[in-house]
Each structure stands twice: as structure tokens, then as C-alpha cells.
Amino acid sequence: MQQDDKRSKTWSGRFTEPVSDLVKRYTASVNFDKRLADVDIQGSLAHAKMLNKVGVLSDADLAAIQKGMAEILANIRNGTFDWSLDLEDVHMNIEARLTALIGDAGKRLHTGRSRNDQVATDVRLWLRGEIDQLIGLLQDAQHSFIDLAEVHAGTIMPGFTHLQVAQPVTFGHHLMAYVEMLSRDEARLVDCRKRVNRLPLGAAALAGTSYPIDREFVAAELGFDGVCGNSLDAVSDRDFAIEFLAAAALTMTHLSRFAEELVLWMSPSFGFITLADRFCTGSSIMPQKKNPDVAELIRGKTGRVDGHLMNLLVLMKGQPLTYNKDNQEDKEPLFDAVDTLRDTLVILADMVPGIHVKSAAMAAAVQKGFATATDLADYLVKKGLPFRDAHEAVARAVKAAETQGVDLAQLSLAEIQSFSPLAGADVFEVLKPEGSVASRNHVGGTAPEQVRAAIERARVRLAG
Ligand code: ARG
Image (cartoon, rainbow, N blue to C red):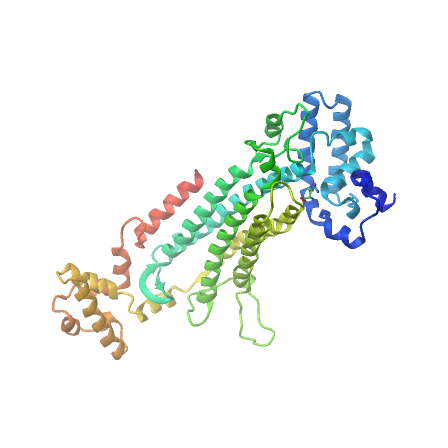
């Protein structure tokens, strides 16, 4: 069959000249949208079944379509399907093959349907499956953080603001912060899924169709929660994909922050952790190097996903109703975002348990940064000093300790009393990091007891 003939079979009966090879490549999507083949066939089968049910398609035609599609699906799965650029996209490739296999019944499949509602249906079906998988992976990632947090519920490290040592926290508490973030990311996906899971089919090209279709039947066949309520909207909007990308970008942003912390913590200047060798590489010139490449790439790949979100927002912003070919450009960003997020979550769930924590280095860093200065101020407040005065007294104590090159806890009682006579011998309790973290014993606080409670809550939530 001539290439131009192939194309003319589908829609170019009114065209007098073929498109150039470049235009063909420029407009074709089959190289990437063949990834939708599975859901495309699922959608077609549900549509055919509905056409048969309402009396538009004969039993014999339906049976032929089902048989033909089974063969096509098998060919696609075993890699023997012959994809053709001339047939533009996944939909026309499959339909043309179906017609080649079963004749006129194949040509009847598209009754009451358009590629516009077909592709919107495909993308939604595909994305729904991916979201379900991603939700599971987000839960796995949370489990890996929780398990490590349990081991380190009492491990003390400096907490930072402005990347300066601020107050002692527990490493378990720090890890559980990410569980909070990832749990919101999970909730966002669950919520987004509700809007993804609506059926566009029946909208046809844009205005609906004159056939006596049963959209609810197709929705039920395909596991959609309901149908899109407006045909013009159904074929044209990609907000469900944009919403997914926003959720994906935010998740990647959270993972990127953690990746950045891993990079910092692994640098000798911090020396808080080492990562398992399987997530690091060496340098071709500096023999001593062990680089946290995987963490760096999590950080780097976040840019891709953020970019994909921007891509689709910009893709959509100037489009008049309804379907425009611009929308064909929704797929590659969406596919890549899903792939990137999936791979990142899989890697992370393996990487977190491989974090080797150097708790002595964490403890030493707490000592160096006057991390218990706030505790001293709070102590003096409890003894009756107004907070602003306590703040000033402690600032002077810190200056003195800094000059001597010692921590607050290493000052003598007499020295501390020279800044505030309210200090007693019990002051040294609050100057210890252990005392500091244990005292923050309320919901959401860093005390080891609270970290264990947070772990318990997270486990119950994830089990439920
Ligand atoms: N490949 C197209 C896409 O992804 C399918 C829909 C094309 N519809 C049309 N009328 N040209 O958007």
C-alpha cells in the first residue's frame, strides 16, 4: 500500500496533495502515543459493546471487533505490531489494522465517536492507572522514612534555620517531617484521581452525537465514576493532567529538598551520613571522591517535572474551545513526569534504608552551635525574667562562650549567673541537648516520645 493511500483511507478524501515527510513527522504522535495502545483498545471495546447494546452495531460486528482487537493487543504486546507514521497516531494505527483484519466491522467502530473524545478518554484511563501505582509507591516511600525514624527517634542532631544551627532536634523527627509532606502528596493524588476518573466518550468531536448512546454504560465498563458533563469541555480541557502535574511537581519538590539534605549531610563538612555505595559514583580524576549522584539527580530531575507543569499550563492558556491539535503535545510531558516520579520514588524507597547515620557527628554539631541557647532563655523566663531580657542575657552568655571557644554547658555556674543571677545549679539540665529535645513534648514536637507517637499515627493511617 502506498503511504499516501494509507493516510487517505482515514481522512484525506478531500485532499488533493500529500503532506511532506517533515509535516508528517511534525504532526504524527504515534512514536509516543503508542504507549496508550492498551487503554485505547479497552476504550474501543467498551464503546463497541455500548453501540451493540443500543442497537447500532450488530452482534456479528461486535464479535469481529472483539476478536480483531484481541489479536492486535497480542501483537502489540509481543512487539510484532507494525506501527506506521503515515497513520499518524495510536488511534488510527489500531483502527486501520482492525479494518485490515476484519473489514467493514472495523470501519463501524468509530460510529458516534471522534478521536477527540477517544484520546481524552485514553489519557484519563492511562493516568488513572499510573496514579494508582504512584499512590502505592508514595506509601512505600513513607514506610521507608518511618522505619528509619523509628531507629532514630532519640538520635540528636542540630535543627537548622537559615542553615545555621538553631535548636536540637531528633533525627527521627526530621525524617517524620517528610512523612507529613508525602502524606499530603498522597492525598493530593487521591483527590486528583476523582477528577481524572470521568468519561469523555460520547462528546464525540465536540457537540455530542445523534446516535442513541449510553454513556453511563461505557463509564461503568471502564470503571469511571461518571461522565464528563459537557461535551465541549470533555474534549478540550486537560486540567486533570495539569492538576496531576502540579501534584507530581510538588512531590518532586519535597523529594528534592530531602535529596539536597542528603547531599549536604554527606559532605565532609557535615559528615552526618553516608549513602550506600550503590547510590554513589566516584570521580574519574579524584580518587577520594564518593559523590551522591543519585540524590543530586533527584534534585535535578525535579526541574523536568516542574517544567512539564509549566509546559501544560502554557499549552492550555491560549486555546479557544474546543479540541485543538495543541493538545497532542500534552502526552510527552505527562509521560515523562510519571516516569520520573515513579523512578524517583522507587529509588528513594531503597535509598532511605541504606542511609548510614553518624550519630556522633550529629551530636558534636549540636554542641558547636549553641543549640540550647533558647532553652537557657526559656529557663530564665520560667524563673521570672521577661523573655526579651532573658534573650539579651543569653546572647551575652553566648558571646562569652564563643570567645572562650566553649559551649554554653561548659561555662561555670558563676559565669552563667554573671549574666543572670536567676540561674541555679539545675540550669545545666536544660543546656544538655537530650533535655532540650525531651522538653518539647507535645503533639508535633521533637521529643523522642512524640516522634514515636507520630510514627504510630502514620502507621495506622497507612494501614487504614
Ligand atoms: N493524536 C491526537 C491527540 O493526541 C488525537 C486526536 C486528534 N484529533 C483530531 N481531530 N485531529 O490529540
